[in-house]
Length: 250
Image (cartoon, rainbow, N blue to C red; front, side, top):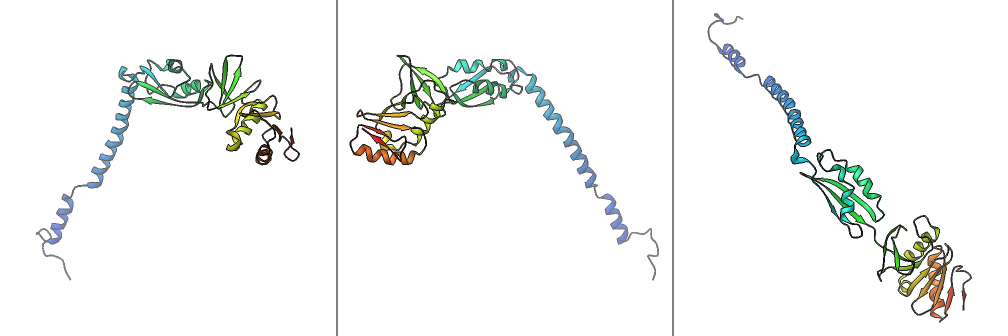
């Protein structure tokens, strides 16, 4: 067996060899393209960062405040004044949120960048749950966590009017009063005109027909409600269910 008589003459094997040599080196071109892309993308990102950080177009010009009713929006905006004149990208959102959250009426706050030239502060204020008389002409507004967050001349008719010496989230009388009122069944709650809480275990409900219901503290609420229902239906004027196993009436 022998090969071609003259290897220099054209033949099928020669044609294949030439075609292979002429094929583009796809792998090397792809690698060069990826390398160029890897260099270009960070460069573009860096350029964009520098533009945002240094161009006056992206400086904070105002603090936008939403969600306030009790608070003055200008007071809230003032807590972000250090960000004004600086890059939107460099605004310390966490510091602004911390400062706003320390305001008593604020239940929660969200601070975000508002491109191209503002910081947005969205406030959720506390809702009044108790109205506590303070002096002769004002009421303290207390939310369902016991936080005192406002003082007004009139109390909304839709919230509880409660007499507590020193309302607050750490005050035991406040804590027990909230526990009682939150769990109070509707048939009794609808009749309550005001509440006195001289001590954590001395909570008394004054009904709108003049009768009184001494509840005690916030424990055994379901049992107290069942006993109170029976005794109030019996027509008693003063009912004490602070010890539901041994209630008293008069």
